[in-house]
Image (cartoon, rainbow, N blue to C red; front, side, top):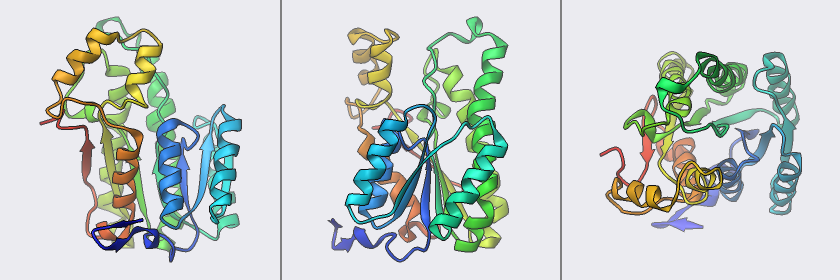
Length: 264
């Protein structure tokens, strides 16, 4: 694979260790795992409940000539998170990149109808879960002078009505990433975030399946996007791999929305 004469397969081929992708069994996470492998990285991916999908993806990556591991993790069990990160670092010979692509589907509700307990639960799973895995990976990222990329949402820049249960914890993740960028740069570690907009093989598909959005609502959503279309998971994977590569070696503490102009 080349881009403007650049051999993208060399992006990670010289890196020691593996990329650790949290939420790699999901549609978006799987696209990121595949792109990292294609670009020369060994990959460890985590799953919460979909072990079959995770193992199948790990098998595919192995067939492409890269090492792969599938690890079950409950992000609310911080001791388990640390043990899993340590185990992968030992097996892979280090961790050069941490990608946080976890994001449980949450119902679309107006904030006035949301129970505070539901907000706390999402913060525990998403924001605190991210912090636990990022902090656990820091010693290995420092050793590799590696980087962290968290997939959040474009909704932290332009709030879609009824999206609070998703965007509130993602805003906390973004704040933590900026903190890591400010504090860990002296060790050669970079930290950035990517904000997906509406994706045909991601959010839009899930919202339609649950009945949260119908065709009329989707048409209205397209009207709010200057490009008048939704993206795909591969668009997000491209942005993540760019930020994780040495082509972005002087970029840290930044947020890149991949949203067709939704946040303009």
